[in-house]
Length: 103
Image (tube, rainbow, N blue to C red; front, top):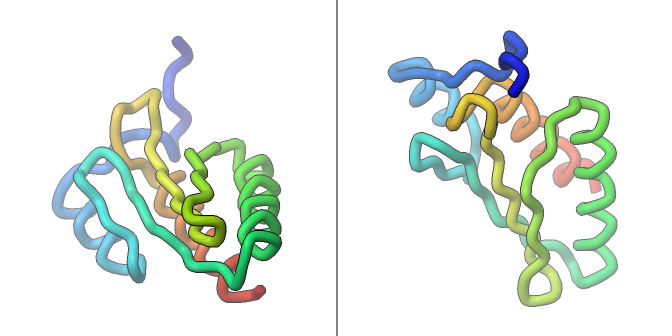
């Protein structure tokens, strides 16, 4: 397994708590970030997933994305290589929030 990039190292307390507190609506268990977004309907949910996919590909950091109850998009971020939350997760969470707000 390759070594983590600089932005993929696991964040430790208290920095992790501070950075997560800046994320509106995201929850954390210390190893992953999670948030559910409510879109206007099925097509809007899928369009949001597409926007997340583009941002994740550009960041080379890929979340788990779940479409639930036809219009809810649940996003789970973690850095597998470091077995926890990294700066990449925090940065992508902010980017995903901006994508949802820009709809």
